[in-house]
Image 1 (cartoon, rainbow, N blue to C red):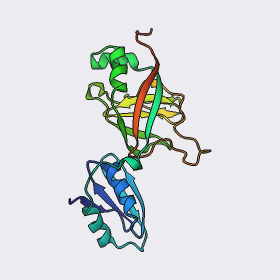
Image 2: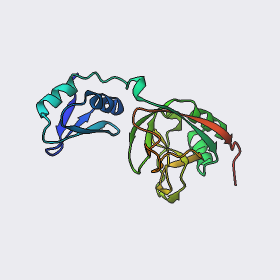
Image 3: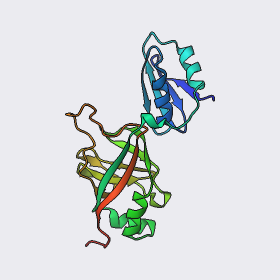
Image 4: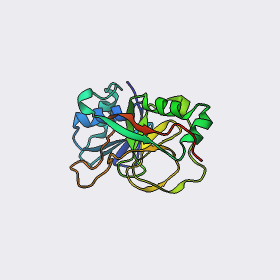
Amino acid sequence: MTYDIRPMGDRALLVTTPNPASLATAICGLRLDGVTEAVPAAETVLIRFDPTCNRSNLRRAINELDDLPATTNSRTHVVIPVTYDGEDLDDVANACGIDVAEVIAIHCAPTYTVAFCGFAPGFAYLSGLDPRLTVSRMSTPRPRVRAGAVAIADRWSAVYPRASPGGWRLLGTTTMSLFDLSRTQPAALKPGDTVQFTPVTSVTTSRP
């Protein structure tokens, strides 16, 4: 297929695609001379290369790729246990016109895909959120969201890997470590991985 490919300076190309994680995985799998990195985002892949790379060959190789899901042997399925005790659980239920138990059930039902990582080390944007849970970010972000907070915003779900400011709607928490520099691979999630949330305990009544 033919992609929209644009130069980004003299050492990178930006490719627009409906499946950035899949395309980035495929490009890395080609092991093309001079290509140093393929970084997926929400709708694009940034391909970085050094001076040894033949750009014409790179463009040709990209356009020869089928935009297919990443192969199963290149991804990991991660199950994340969640205690649904988030500060915004009631507000999300009210905004979506459903009760808290339905919010939890709907949030746990999909198998999510790590579309890309950003904002902070280990922060993975998870696609696959049910449209019934579409809510906007907060107008004023919290100055501190605790590590392990499970949240949603717009069409994404995510887990805060460490304490940081944040404006996503908080549904719960997990004790699973999403980013740890002592590990060989510090980030628990990478683009293309799949994620399932599973409830540990839940809060199903409104809180004062």
